[in-house]
Image (cartoon, rainbow, N blue to C red; front, side, top):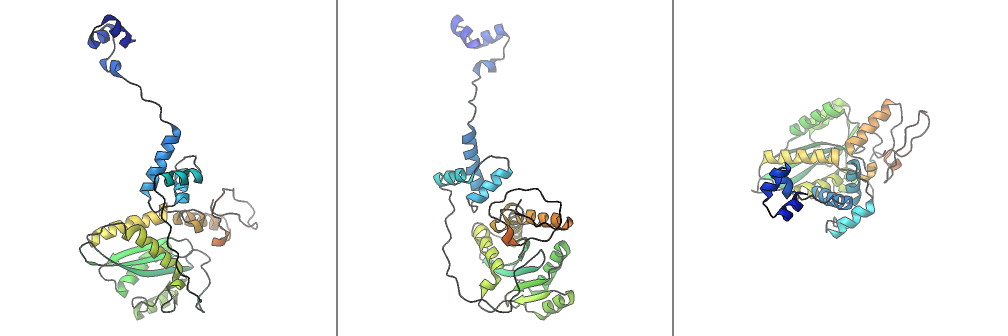
Length: 304
C-alpha cells in the first residue's frame, strides 16, 4: 500500500509514512520466506554430525529422535554421505585364537565385574601423561578417567575408594598384570573388602575386551582429537569425555541407550522386583513397550 502511494505521487518515503501514519521501517520491510522443514532437518543432521564426528548414522538418528525430530536412518545416512560426513570404517583386526581357562563368566548384573587399565599419552609440549580408566562391564558406565604424570598403587586405591562410595563395591575386578594392580597393598585392600581379582594371562589383552574396547574409543574420540598442553587441561577434557560417554553416547550393545540411561532402567526394574536382563536380550532397534504387572512374566526388549 505504502509503496503504491509512493510510486503514484512520486514523493519521498518519509512523506508517505507520515501521511499514512506508518513507521518508515514498514516501508522497507521484506518478508522472509518460510523455511522448508526438509532443509531444516538436513541442516540439523549436518549440525549433529559435526558435533559428534565419531557417531555413526544410527547414533545420530537416535539423538535427533530424542530431540523431537521425525527422521529415519535412511535419510540420515544419505545426508551424511552427500555432505562427506560418513565415519570411515575401522580396519579389521586379526582375531587371535584361544581363550584363557579359569576366567569368570560374562558380567550378569551391575557391579558384578569392573575392569581397569592404563593408557599412556603425551602433552603437546612432550610431558608424560598417564591415564587410569575404570568401567562397569555390564552397564558400560565409565567410573573413572584419572590423569597424572605418574600413578602409583596408592593413587589407584584412592580413586577406587571414591568410585565405590559413588557406585557401590563390585564383586570382581578384571585387569592385566601391571605393577600397580598386582601390588601387595592393593591385593590386601581388595581382600579385606571382599572383592575378588581377575588377572588376565600375560600378552592376552583380548581377555580384558570391554576395557580394551573403551580404551580404543577413548583414544580415537578424545586423545587423538584434542591438543592437551597441561595436566589440569587434560583433567577438564577427560571429564567432558566421561560425561559424553555416560550420558550422550548410545551403545548398540545396550539397545542404543546410554550407559546412565541403561543403569537407571536397571534401577527401576530392580525396584519392581524384576530380574536383571542379560545383554543378549537387548536388540539393536529398541521398540518401547509398557512393563507388565506380573512379576513372573519375562521382560521383552529392555532398550525401551
